[in-house]
Image (cartoon, rainbow, N blue to C red; front, top):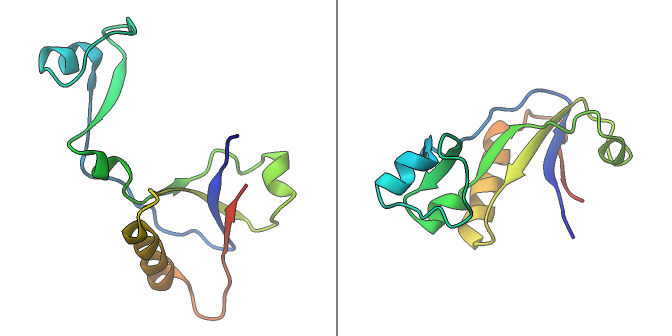
Length: 115
């Protein structure tokens, strides 16, 4: 079963990226000993490499590609959607709550969805 986490709002909210990721080609990653190519990926394709598993699960928030998706639109009528990626550690939930507290405008509501 797949699911989709997103924040819906009436105004644009800031993005949060993971600064600990490194983008490189499969060839570069194999040459550096960071991965094997057991699945025969094209050597010129790009992969994201994280230093630790914890960094992979850090909070990331970015504009959603599903803004006009019919399923999503049955849940919200808000104008702006942001994908939310976070791990299952309590610290990640705390980071999300801090983000919402810091970025919500007084007197407004945002919706946090998992569908």
